[in-house]
Structure formats: C-alpha cells, structure tokens
Image (cartoon, rainbow, N blue to C red; front, top):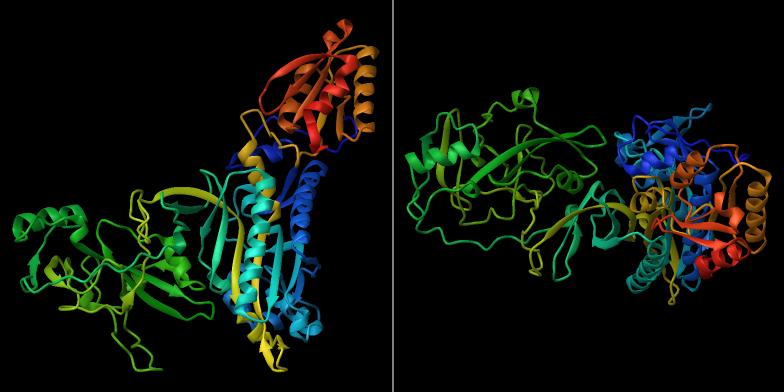
Length: 591
C-alpha cells in the first residue's frame, strides 16, 4: 500500500448519483476527466481486465476470434449504411487536416462487415464469429452515474456471419448461451428480456438487464414467463365493439374542464351516459409531439390514448427512432391553427390513407392511437372548439385514425400481452444486447459469398454487445454496502489484504511474512504497510473491498491473527503458524 498509486477519499464526489459511482471514486479506482469520461487507476484497471478475461474466455469457448479495429474511422462506410445521418448528435464527428470527415466509432457493424467482405468469399468459410473489446464513443446528451452512462466506454461487440437464417438462428443461440455464462460468472442478478432493436435494425432482439432499483431501463415480467423491456412491449388491439346502440355524437359546453377529472365530473353532471358513469378511461386524450429526423425534416405527430394513461416518452422515442421527440410548444401550435390547445379532437387530426408515394399535406398532423382505440369504441374528447367537448364519438363511425402506436405507460398489474398474467414492473441496467441483424449491413456494403450452388448469396449477420466497463460499475453497485466496495473474489484486484495494525517491528515483520507466504502460494496479496493508524487501515480496507483481510495486531503477542470476511463482516482468530493455510482454505479453488 505504501507504493500503490491510490488515494482514498473521505467525502463523496459532488456529482455522484449512485453508490457505484461514489465508491469507485472514493476508493481510488477511477477519476473523472470530463462529464462521462473517466481515467482508470491501477485498482480499477485490474477489475476491468478481469471482466475482459471472463468475456474473452466465454467468447473463445464458442469459437469466436478476437480482432481489433481503430476507434478513429472514415465517414464513407457509415454513409453507406446511412448511420452517419441516423446517429445524429450522438456521433462524435471530426475533420482531419485534409478535410476528410471522420468519426469516433460508436459501434463497428460496418467495419466488421467490410473486413469479412475482404477476406471471406465462400459459404465454406461460414459460420464465422468475430469480436473485439474496444473503446467506444457516443456523445451522450446526459452522461450520468459514473461508468453507467458515459461518453467513452469499453464494450465487447461481436458479430456472426452465416449463409442463411437457419445458420443465424444457431449463431444467435450460441452467443446467448455464452452471455448467460458471462453474466453468471460476474455474479449479479439479471434477467433476459425481449428488446427493441432501435437504430441497430434487425429482427430478434434480447437484452440482459442487471436488476437495479436505480437502473435507467424499465422492464416487465409476468408469472407466466413473459419478460420485456417496456420499449419492446406491444399490446394487442382490443376487440372491436358493436356501437349500433351508441347515440349520435353531440358537442357540449364544458367550461373549466382543464383536467381529465374535472371533465369527467362535468360530463356525469351535464350529459351522463345511458349505461354507466363516464370514467377517465372513457376520455380520449390527444397529445401533440414534434419529430425531428437526423436529416432535419420535421413531422407533427398526435397520439390518442385513454385519458387515464400518459404517453411514456421512452417508449415513444424507441418507436420513432432515429427521430428526436419534443412536445409541442406555442410556436409549434402557431403553425397548426386548426388545433385548439386543450380541446384537440380526432376530427382535426390525421390525413387518412394516402396514394402510394404521395406526401401528406404540409399542415396535416399524423394521428396514431392506442391499441384500446378500435372501431366501435365510444369516447369523450375535444371538439376542436374552445371550451367544448364531444361525447359519444365512435371510432370507425365518426373518425378514423391513421394507425396504431402502443406507447402508453405500462402499470403494475396490467395484463401481459401474451395473456400470461399480470405484469410486474422493475428497473434494470442494460448489460448485454443481442440482435439478429439479418442482411441490413451486408446488403448496404455488398457482403456476399458463393453458396453451395455457386451463386452469390447475401450474408446474414448477428450482432452481440456487452458493456465491459459498465460491468465494473454494475458489480460494484450490486455488492457495495454503506462502508465501501465489496468485490466478489473473481473480480477483486487482490484476493487478500494483510493489515499491519500496530507499532513495533514484530507486527510489521509478521504481516510481511504472511503476505510473502500467501503470495508464494499463488494468492494475490495487498499488504498495508503504511505508517497509519489502525482506524485508517480498517476504514480503507472496507472502502477498497478486497474479499478477505488478515489483521496482524495486538493479539500477535499471544500467537494469533484475525481473518475477516468483507462480505459477511465476520471475523475469527487463527494461529500465526496456520494463517496462510486458513486463508487458502477460505479462498478455495478460486485461486
């Protein structure tokens, strides 16, 4: 410890939002350079390398081969796949001295595709699995939580190349099994959920989420086995209803109806239903958004949904990606004079079916509705007039939306889309994501091989990512306590920390002897030989989080030392002569 490049801190960093961020900085594992950018100190780098080793072992076990691409890349391949535009502001762009556009790689589908195109010509060379562990760059709008959402991070990305869908299915399952082994070894609780492919494209897509109450992702699961990120949940359309007995739609004055609750109360007083009272779920709320696409094009979008629900902006953003989503402001409303703020109804929205290739009118608002809004359903909604609402407006009879979009918030107890029971909502941190990309990138970049019949066949691809640096934070998050870090043995920088806690040469010599004996027997040992008080050494040992500590102190005169377990907090005395054997027995086969 007297020579280790580390300094523990007694105070939390000002920008620390989550425990992992707080303790990794306080323990001297990482240091902030800029928002979302961190340096790795020796202890942190040791943990990072251990995560990398686990990932490498499991990837190599399925026959994957490691390569390494540069982080600095030319524009042209990303132009061919259209991701130079689609990535938008998330891409770090720069221009070299000759005026050529370059980027810092956010992910490397294009580069892997081109590499395989250069080398592989026949179906006999497939299947092929390639991977790298490399630094990635994304210009996050809101970097936060230390290593959990940074602008520079270490990621393992791998790609499978097959001649057909059957091959891709097998490659996907091989990677999925490898990921299960990786995350089982890392030791945190995780779930595998259906996921949204987003800008990556492709069909089948699953996420491995570390269960964490402060995670950025919300997922749902049911007793019957349904599990999905909320962004990927697609509820089926409600059954159509018979509206033959619903009276004609009537517009009513509804003064002072600024909320759904006040509107429902007025409706039940002024124009009650003939079958039951109006409820919040009977109102049709129309929420306006502006979509801005990477090429600068904008579009107005209205979402119609029952008034007892809100639009989940993360679900909406995932559904319309790569467009950016903002809510309508006064300037936006000014461009659409037909929309009466607070009283927008479906009659002022939508542009109906368009002839193939036709553009919608410039002043039209695309109108998509919740799966609950189907033909025959009866609604109380805005009448497109100030202070007025229309009752008994029937979908399919009185208005027709442009289509459906399921982006309403999901609630605890909602029925699973597959009918497998009520949904339970939880939070998680995305640790891995696997995709069946299909032929998107191979087509864009011309990756084809000769098949068994001598014909050129477009290669089908899979993409598989693991957040390596994020794993360090996730494990820290899952294992730390109110005293500091608490590493599982497979990831700890050192197996054992030996503390010399007392004055006198005898204590220092005994501590050094035990450390030397353990080291000679293959144990990674950190010896705290500093001239510091026992209190400081004990506090630092808990902050640093090594699994086992050997305390050499006041009981040495009686022939005993103490072995402490960081996770359980238990301690026991053993004889000095048996200390090394006792530690080895505790460590077990991990060493």
